[in-house]
Amino acid sequence: MKTSRAPTIHGGAGGNRISISSSSRMGLGSAMGVGSGAGGFSSSIQVSASGKSADIMGNEKFAMQNLNDRLANYLETVRNLEQANHKLELKIKEALEKSGPDFRDYSKYQVILDDLRKKVFDATTENARLVLNIDNARLAADDFRVKYESELAIRQSVEADIVGLRKLIDDTNMSRMNLESEIEALKEELIHLKKNHENEVMELRNQIAQSGVHVDVDAPKGQDLSQIMAEIRAKYEKMAQKNQEELKAWHESQITEVQVQVTESSTALKEATSLMTETRRRYQGLEIELQSALSLKASLEATLRDIEMRHSMEVEKYNAIIVRLQEELTQIRTNIQQNSREYEHLLNIKVKLEAEITQYRRLLDGDLKLEDAVDPKTVQTKVVTVTQTLVDGKIVSESKDVKSSEKLAM
Image 1 (cartoon, rainbow, N blue to C red):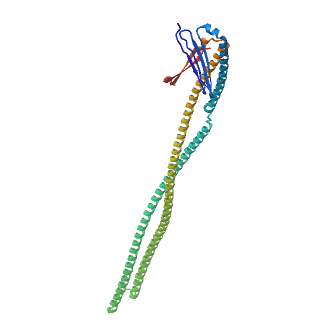
Image 2 (spheres, rainbow, N blue to C red):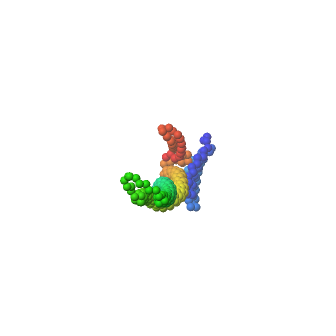
Image 3 (cartoon, rainbow, N blue to C red):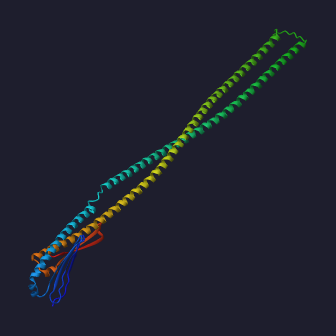
């Protein structure tokens, strides 16, 4: 007694289906069927054999005719399968052309990335130039501030000198007024001395005129009194004139000295005034330059902030583009892997179909028995791919990919 078995092989692509089934039961019975469909085409082959060879021999003519008909149908089915195989190869080729590794041209992304790198470099250069301009403006502002402080110190010193000169002029004016008052007092004293001298002379003359006493002595004749008075008068007048001339000369020398001091003070005052005017003008000019430098600095800082903001926005935009490109690249790689798996699957189906076609041909040529055809032997192949990630000689991650495939034994 034989056990019952029913092996089945299926393969299909593009609307094709192939099935082989066999069964054996008590009484030694077997059957084989082949069916396919491509574009609405369908055919079937049915071979039955009984365990009794006498029945087969009795119907040999009918069996041969039936086998011829079935052979014609089988050849038609083989042609349909070859056409389906050809269509499948065309589809695989089209799929590889559409989503293969050489389909997408990434050179345009390289141009975009080069342009983005150039823009980032130009923005960095512009940023450095603006920072340098700001530093130069800051240094210029510091220089203007130092000049302003120096000019301010000079101005304060000149103002202090002007105050001192004004005080000196006031002291000189006071000295001149004191000298003038002394001159007036000396003039009054001179007039008073002249009056006293005249009064004394008049009194002496009156006394001499009123005196009537004549003394005669044996002495040398004295000088004339009028002559003596004239000499005394001349002497006093000479002394008074000398004192007046000396006083006048001293007064003139004092006035000349005061005038020289006043002239020098006036000249110094004019020079100090002109210097103060020039200093004030330079101070105003430096203050204007300082305000201009501060305005330029504020404008450059605002420009720098604007450029930094635009630079950050452009960097974010470029980062978004890079992320999008990376996502597209990941999606492309995923599609490539998926298409590769589909291609392997279709290739396996193609191999199975070719093996079945070869088996059918061997069956028709008589090189293969029906019992071996309905119970084919398959070879299962497993491919194990181990991926390890090494960091400094140490394994940090490990992944394993197992792919299995079955192939009919020839």
